[in-house]
Length: 180
Image (cartoon, rainbow, N blue to C red; front, side, top):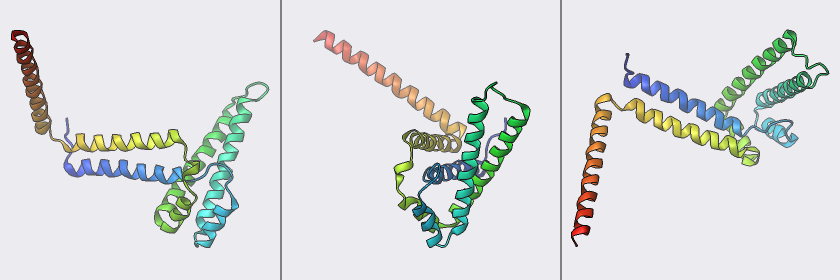
């Protein structure tokens, strides 16, 4: 089996951290139709392109939700191939617009500050927990990827030796308690 080089491991970790940063940024984007103050703040900061991207995203989200509701709540439960294809096309457009929004936010610190100023009120607790778990997973992956096989074997042997010493010390302590 091919072993990852340090450079490859760093690349994997950088990809995970980039995804985590993007998700964190997106957690500040309000869902649905936001207040006009937020959109006006983007224009005031000179990032009107982000305003237009957000409006497109919200419009696509709303259209997708309407399409899903109509497909599920139809009189005959119509789940035709045409409606599924349209839904998939809309999802592709939504994915594209969200990636574009992420790129624009990463390029514009002023826009990020506008989102941060909006406050974390709209950030859901489950999503924040997800971000925390993903961050922990990134750290675990970094530790696993940056540890060589020899280091891991040494750590396992050391842990085994320390466990054996602890068990023998407990046995000696129990023996001394019995003799007293």
